[in-house]
Image: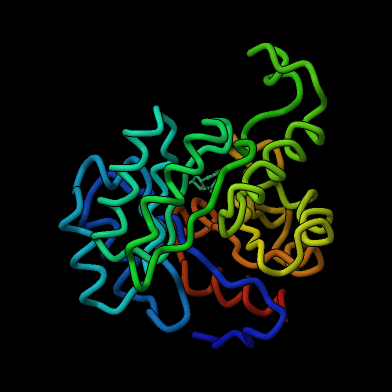
Length: 236
Ligand code: C5P
């Protein structure tokens, strides 16, 4: 396995989106926890719960708990606190939950010495402008991302999830303290599946993205290590 030069290169978060622990561990066992971060999302958390996170912590991995909280402020406060109690490295909320919800999530982390990075999803990378229109959002996708990223930044969050093509602008607006997390990473030969905003690993580096989230490109690959090496190489 290649070791990436982390200077000015996006760090890699692997989305462990599997339906069984056995399948997940087959990949986890190949990974070096000092190089890769793991993302536990709704699927694995629903199947395996917090105990799986504890097991991955024992193996030395930093965990991004991507449950994308979106609820009333009190519920999000308590859920955020519970997630931080698990010792995860990063966790996510939906910026569209609004100012009070974002402030509650932030407040929930106040008492932690080593709080997780709190990241707000601006827009799902599976949504296009037409999808926003269908749910009554009539402004452009770019403006929608701008409004929600600004709100997240004003509420003191540590970063945002946004489509790759918007990342450079976000860095210019909010500086390096705003961490940019981007899913939808694909090579031209990969299937895009349900993602509508895709970029290559090389483009992710050019867009100054801090963390790329890679799921199916790796999880459906016959040779995930070869694919990861390819990704690392293309970003050097
Ligand atoms: O398989 P793929 O590489 O498309 O996986 C992307 C991962 O990133 C999934 O786990 C998905 O839940 C997550 N994600 C996303 N778009 C966002 C936020 C998270 O695709 N805006």
